[in-house]
Length: 432
Image (tube, rainbow, N blue to C red; front, side, top):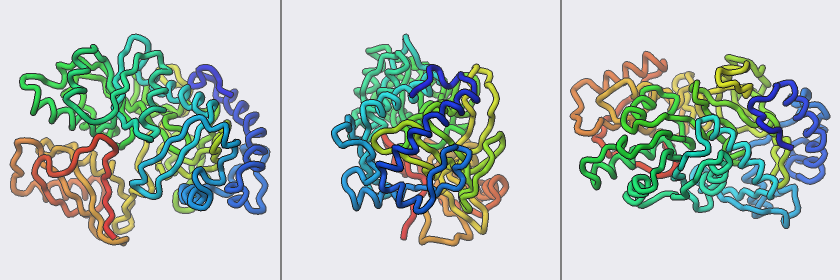
């Protein structure tokens, strides 16, 4: 089902390959997934991928309801339960916890595709990479581990917790790369400052930082700070959608955008997030990413709304030689806040905060009620050993107004007032 080095393959050949796979996958899903039959109603799935626009979309809430009424895997478990080889479970922090089933083939394809993304970011034989995502049930732990192994690198399965042991492990094993969330280095920096006097983060000798699971890396100031503090190359190496593939896009060594490296077994579309109208897949188009498995046994998804708003930044062969289309994640539709008719995303706020040396970069947006909102309330930390000067909050508010076009109400907090986390950091807090 996979094409060797698909991220370098001819796009026309990849499209023909997907069409060939879809002709089989279409019948498989129609016969074995009641969820999709309900979603489609009287609409028959088209034989050609070019007819996808007429096929109803699926979304996360449909999957949640399916698992609530048909536990544990939902009635979109298309394979025989005896073929399930691996089970993951989400934390449920943003909704009902989801159970994720993979067959042996599903797991193999996941590792290969994720390995392409990690390899694009520079990981490979000769590297020793410490993996610092949670191994407890979450796909980002063990399954992401297999994507790192697929590059030929030596993987140290550390997980989360005991950051002092992690620092010593990096020193003693000669580790060259770290895989974690973008917010995790701040946790390590505090541990180093408190427990390793005289040691600087860059003294650890890490050459490569492989990040995923959170937004933030599109902020050039944030990237520059990480590079200056740690001395490693910063790579957005791990973009994925848990229900689809844990990792199917990564940044290469020569540009800052994500390469979509799964075009042999994953069919992408862009839609208008408000109207669901299909948008052209071409450079400059911005819309919600919709994905379809071309080869999935256990829980196949067809026209699945990811909730991620992306912009296509390139469709030709890149400087690194890859044909894989390039894109950038703007934000999530469920994190989008509409302020007086303007769509605002946490990533835009982060980009503004990165312009101020007096701020730590940590923030959260705290919303009371469902809206509509006239003002964006933002809690922001000042930098370590910094006293906020009078007028700083007003200056940040003015910059948000200039750059995003919305009014904000900024509350300044002392350094370390906001929680750091070893997992994903929530930037939007909704209080009902």
